[in-house]
Image (cartoon, rainbow, N blue to C red; front, side, top):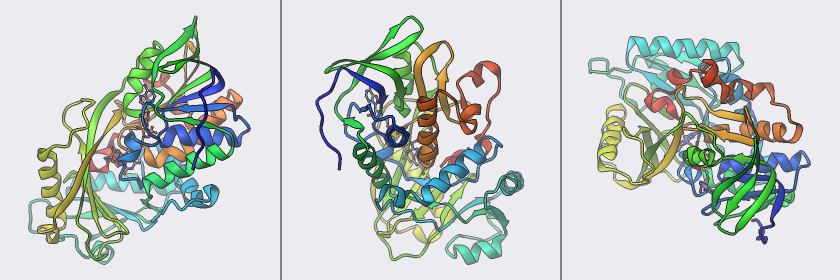
Length: 396
Ligand SMILES: Cc1cc2nc3c(=O)[nH]c(=O)nc-3n(C[C@H](O)[C@H](O)[C@H](O)COP(=O)(O)OP(=O)(O)OC[C@H]3O[C@@H](n4cnc5c(N)ncnc54)[C@H](O)[C@@H]3O)c2cc1C
């Protein structure tokens, strides 16, 4: 899939983090002709949040900055298998965000209208159509939180997370990029206002540009460069059930019940929700979260009550105050580029984020699409508030 190389002491670009973002950045950089690139990871390729992602892809966000950005990523996903000549198993069967309260339905309607204006296929559907799309949802109206309406987003779907990572890694390798797993970065080298490389367990590596694509570890790597980030790292858990015959081909999510559910090609149900209540770098899964998610899933789809749980896992997420990513150069620190703030929503963004950051590194110009997401926005009070499109389960 990708070759092994001895680590050299200098590259044009060093990317820290061989997750989906680091590898997609490397791939698009090489496509732009920048091939003297090393991707370094402290662990195995794609072993961070990318290995743990439930990999839902969608574009039905809320802001005028976020919607076009995620729309372009969705478009890239539609042709990614062809681009990488690798089956990423994009199952584009649609998603329903259900609302159980007047205020939620109001917020869903707002997203629908903005989505339509910005070219994203979304519409509000009522209980009758919900029943047709996902017959197993509990639509009884005499319960505590009845399903009132849903935002239906037909182009949403799921991808096979490992396949996307491996496809980008193989593609980047084929174009001349070096991938170095088990090569942890222990320091960032600086000369005045310029980052000049990284320190690793295998020795120092000089670089014209260092890109940090380290998601849950972003604050640590940025701290090594003397850059403070408004990111707090939280665990995010998910689990799968035993396989069942296919009965549900849509992703369903409830922002009021804090849960999302979809069925994989193997028949397992993938169930997840919001981040843990407390920030930590721990990857431990908890019974408490399993119980909570299972309870909410059964509330939405009561027929799941006797289904057995097979596996539960946890990854860590780099949460930003406005639930939007942080991309681009850092004022006052030349040669250091951030690809961070991916929280619980970053897998779907990897193609366009990688492509845009590659364009920035290759040309020195920040593409318009990612300009609003710079670190400067926190100092200038220009937040991109995606929180309403990311409340609890709708985070994904
Ligand atoms: C349970 C779960 C479900 C999710 N579901 C979805 C979803 O449905 N849709 C969606 O869009 N997103 C989802 N996400 C979020 C998404 O998975 C992440 O945002 C995305 O994978 C981040 O990719 P990345 O490449 O930036 O980070 P990662 O994949 O975490 O890669 C960062 C890499 O940096 C490496 N690293 C860290 N420190 C160092 C160091 N000092 N030196 C060298 N390397 C280092 C790590 O080893 C790691 O491999 C989910 C996340 C989790 C945990």
